[in-house]
Image 1 (cartoon, rainbow, N blue to C red):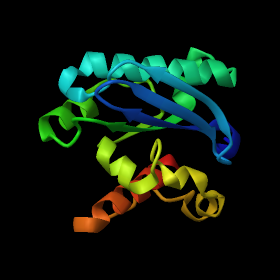
Image 2: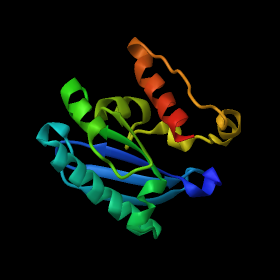
Image 3: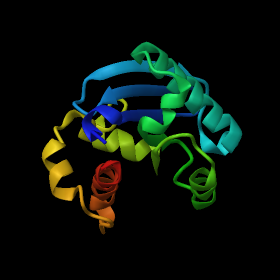
Image 4: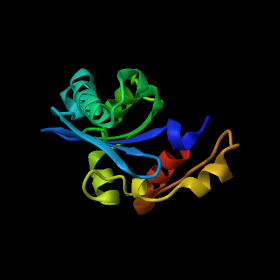
Length: 160
């Protein structure tokens, strides 16, 4: 499998009033954007994921992708309400359609990358693909101020 062409990166900013999404190629090229309804997990997991999928399908449509391409998407879902352990656990257990989904709070995403978060999506990670391509597991730690950075690094590790 050619990871560069077979995988897409999806950033979700799921807030209490709306959900914004951006789909990118591994190169960082923007492929599409979308908007959905409220995605705060506290509103209910079905409501949250319904809004996330609404925004996702808009991105996919703009990129010329079909629903069967959902399994080619690595998603980082920055969702309001994910700071509460019970809500985060519900999101982690929810049967999402993506190849991989990473969950962070919307506040963590905003601190890391500004608008739509995901500053790491603007970087060229291709050198890491070769170096980590054969790894079967990795450990990533963060504490205090480095926790958000460690989670962003974990996102990139899971994508590969």
